[in-house]
Length: 136
Image 1 (cartoon, rainbow, N blue to C red):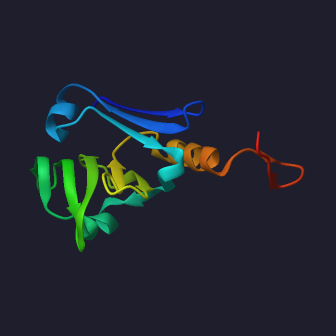
Image 2 (image 1 turned 180 degrees about the horizontal axis):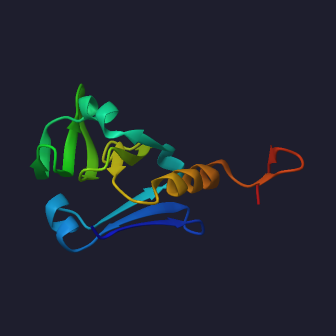
């Protein structure tokens, strides 16, 4: 799997880059998620997310093996999710206010650190002594 998730604090966005076979299976190579559209990032079990995954609208699916590409959102006409998941039981989930994608679900080995960093940048810097937010 060749997946890149970059947190660009200057441009204030998360950039998801898929390469090689991953981009072919997901039918996409790059997704830009501006921080103002991100509502949160977390690590979640795949089993808790599958009921919220609608019809495959482009990509690859093999039961128990791979879920890659664009998927609908049940009950939300026009809304899309981007998935790139193989067999890991836990994944990185980035939720947004966008319709496309409303959610990005990625299998990545550094999912805990990425979720922490995205949420940290989203909140803004804090002063550990004061416990308050600073706007730089």
